[in-house]
Length: 282
Image (cartoon, rainbow, N blue to C red):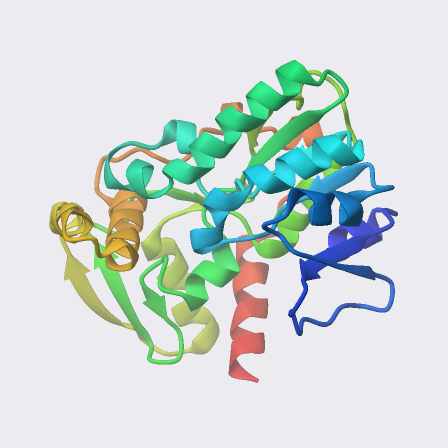
C-alpha cells in the first residue's frame, strides 16, 4: 500500500464489515460484504484499479471481486497471484495453488467479454522477508538453526515485500499489451540457502546449526499429506521441495522476468539481510 501512495496513487482500503484493521490517514477506508457482488460493487465505485491482497484459503474467492470490478467500471484488476507463477508449477504445489490458476482463467473470460476491463497477475516468487519469518527458506534466525535441503546450493527466486509493492505500482503505471491480461514474473534476486545462511552468520557473528534433509523425502511427505487432506502441512513440504530440491532448476530466468520492462531495481541482498537482522533483533 505504501508503494502505491509513494507512486502518487489515491488509495482506498476495502475491508470486511467487521474488520478491525487500521490504515494510514492517507488511505480512505470503505467496508463491504466481500461475498456480495452488489456490496463490493458499491465499494469499488469511482476507482480505476483494484489490487486484491486476500490470502490463504480466501484466494479461491476472487470471482465475486472480479465481477464487482466489472460492474463498477474498474479498468485494471490485479488478482492475488503473488508468489509462484502457477503456470510454472507441477506436482503437489500446482494442486495446492490451483485456485489461483482458476482465477486467472476466469479473469481471461471476463476481459474477453468486457474490452474496457483488463487484469495483470504479478508473480513474485516467494516473499523473502516474510518467508524468512515463516520457514519458507528453512531458516530460524532467533534459534540460529537452518534446515538445508539436499546440498543447499539450489537457487530460488525471491522478492521482498517492498519490492512486491513497487512491482504492483509499476504494473498499474502501464496499460499496454506487455502487461494486459496475463501474469508477469518479477524477481528481486535469486539466492541459495547456503548464501542466505552464510550472510546471516557473517552479520550475526554466530554459527547456525544445520540439519540436512533430502528434497525427495519432502516431496514424498507432501504427496502423503495431500492424500490425507492435510493441506497446510503439505504446502510447506511441497514449497520447500519445489524451491530447493537439487537439480529442480525452478528459479525464474532473468530473461523471463518483467523487471526491465517495469524499470524495477533490486536491493542488495546483503543490505536486505542486514536490515532483516536489525529489525528482528530489536
